[in-house]
Length: 475
Ligand code: FAD
Image (tube, rainbow, N blue to C red):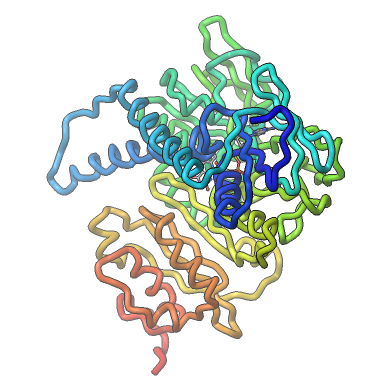
């Protein structure tokens, strides 16, 4: 690439938002430059997020399932874990997908530049490639620079036993006693991975419950499972100090509602949220607005205050999820290419890929109560599902919320194996404006967990036959 270049569109960051934006714009005929500071494409999601964590959770689930099978008369020897092979398995998946993205970029003739982008003005970037600085002027720019793990003050510095999600996924060592600070999605997923790999895991959460975004009744089966796997789970508890010990471990001070205590751990994993990657961008050279938390402010067209600059994905704030980044990336690409498009997705689903999985979409009961939104619900306990009983997943549940007037679906939540896959049907139902009858009268295959979605709607319409609810049925 020339030292000074002018492009139609430059995309900063090749995560799931950035590469989707670059590819869509290239397909629409634009000359696209995709700038990425990492060695590989795919961003956090592929290199140190969704994919490696789910690869490890797959192992964790398989271990748990083999244990469950003992009640069906099938037993296995004690699990033997070769951590180097586990690492190789995870790295191979990541690298296979890295190559896939690179070949998709090549096929579309997207120009990929490995370098770090920084704004000089509303129409110009400086890109540092090694020791060289390149000047790129652009017609349009899409910022997709993502986010990084947030931290808490007072942690021991330069200590590789203080883990973030990124270093935890590298599996450099499996500590005997691990403290996970933060009982949100990432903390619980990685806690379950380390527990399966042999660590004694404790979790501390500042808020009164785990997974604060989900309804507590949907988190309960997960919490029960984690209580049997983890050493302790403390909620409404604050970590006030983490001190290094001479034996290489840590003494952690915990302040609960009733007592303050200190506990010893061999490693701590910080999973207390994520912060936007704005620090390298030099946004002060532009007229882009950021909010009080540092995320870039955008409109429904993913436009920043500067009309030729768009922003997508984690850098624009919650929900910080790969599928939201990808969807926004396509919208930004289309708008920047003059195609009529907007971020008008009715809902964005959330999934916790633990065992059991927890997934929800649209309105939750918690949110409805906080906002005073009227709703009615249908709930189907998986104890009445043949497939769930086969899978030893009787603790699962499917819950669907409906508008009392129109009977249209407002939201849904599922807890149990494959909840993350099952929730897609609820997403489609919400997007299509389905009502309870549409869902209940859709014939679902038997025996499947998918049936529980229709069954929850039938509980609501009082047409369910798989349960006996002593109230008047409807004709
Ligand atoms: P990122 O994926 O963060 O990519 C941004 C890219 O921009 C990075 O590659 C970065 O190097 C590059 N960059 C930054 N600044 C510059 C610059 N100045 N110049 C050039 N390049 C730059 N989400 C899900 O939906 N499902 C999951 O299961 C899931 N699991 C997760 C597990 C973990 C452990 C973590 C940490 C996250 C997980 N997420 C999950 C969240 C998901 O990874 C993010 O929402 C998603 O990656 C955001 O995509 P993005 O394109 O906005 O940014």
